[in-house]
Amino acid sequence: MRDFHAPGRSPVIAARGMAATSMPAATLTAIEVLKSGGNALDAAIAAVAVLGVIEPQSTGIGGDCFCLYAPAGTGRVYAMNGSGRAPMASTPEALRALGVNQLVDTSAHVVTIPGAVSAWEALNAAHGRKSLDFLLRPAIGFAENGFPVLQRVAADWADAAGKLRLNEASTRLYLKGGEAPREGDIMRFPALAKTLRAIAAKGARGFYEGEVAADMVATLRALGGLHTEEDFAASLRGAEFVDPIKRAWKGMEIFECPPNGSGIVALMMLGLLEGFTPPEGAMSAERFHRHIEAARLAYRDRDAFIADPAQVEVPTETLLSDAYLHGMAKLITDERAMVVPPAPDTLLPKHKDTVYLCVVDEEGNACSFINSLFKSFGTGITAERSGVMLHNRGFGFRLQEGHPNCIAPGKRPMHTIIPGMAMKDGRAVMPFGVMGGHFQPMGQTLLLSNMFDYGMNPQEALDAPRLFPEAGKVQVEAHVPAATVAKLNALGHVCEPISKPHGGGQAIFMDHDRGVLVGGSDPRKDGCVLGY
Image: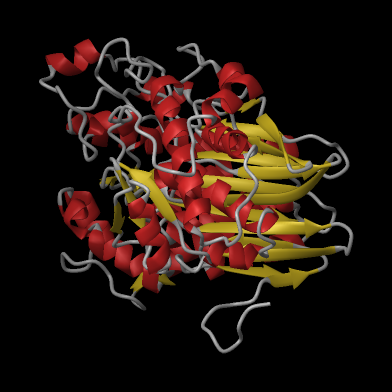
């Protein structure tokens, strides 16, 4: 039990339904959908649409998504890949002919065709109970009538103001007098509301065809992009259900979306660590040292192998095999930090903005959902007439021929956003996710270990301090104990403080024995858990 004299919050416990998102209004939207007769997937779609309006730096219809959905009584987990593809004219040769020798995160060339709306429609058609028209009404209301800017959103908005000023439409729509809105300011997006209404009325066609698509294409081509309306029309059914990947762990099965997502990295880390007996103390240097070493090995392989399996052979089975992982784990020793070749430069920026949410309904359906613009406000490019902020997921591509992530027509880039789902005996145990770009596999494994190695509840597990190895150093949050940091340095790690904390997260543990749901929401964001 937590110290009630100390700052913090208790986990939320409820018996029927629960939602956890990074914004209170989105969480409340999800609960209202559940109470209206919608299921967990309906609630997730409605909530993520709201987040695309009121947390605009993180997500929106101009981005991508992934989803894991576990319908009660089926024993199955459905995986949705809602990541977009490069325009058909995008080749290294074509870009070099335009004088592009390096991809820039604010360029039209890193905009892949957004996949989120296609995925929402496909998920809704396969597993939803409510119409898209019904589910999008709350988001439309916030875009038309306005919403107050919350504290973390205001801070992120201020950090991204310079990027937004680079684009005239973004300056007009997302800034006030050239400055980011302050905490408590009311913002409205009438053009985005109109586009959401088009999607509500026409489904995904309202986004990928007609005037909305034409506006996005015109905007991108004016900035040198190679996109066409045919690229958008071809993406109408671009989202697809895929076979999830999984690994047995501590009597459960942990499910992830397969490559081009990087959920495989989380499963690899669990496999690398499973041979070690968890040391005493969740904040011990020994525990963090092993986690750092496992991350260095798994992320090295991510950079070498993970790409779009439709165009590149990805050795998923080998990377998840016991023989490979247990053999590689022998490189980890408690005496010192290992010396490994530095991981290839992935061109992924240090901080990304993403929303993760999870919902469980009273039937036991569980949804794990993640939606992202990649970096804060994506490219910073807005299609003004439609109000769509465009992501920069294509920044994960390379121009290096022969590299697994070399840009190519219709190719999906390696993705960092990963929803997770724990199952046991054919039933969902916990939808979970941790935001924060390529920190996410590290974050997921820390969360799982906090709960199932160290007995924390979901809120404690999300509250706990984090660290992450990157570029030869270990980025440490402020509340990692100083003695732990000193011991890590003595082992050969180079620890440095990080200005912004690592990611954010949500989790809902389904306690089937007691018939209750136990939820947590990360204090690093503005969000909350609600249950009933």
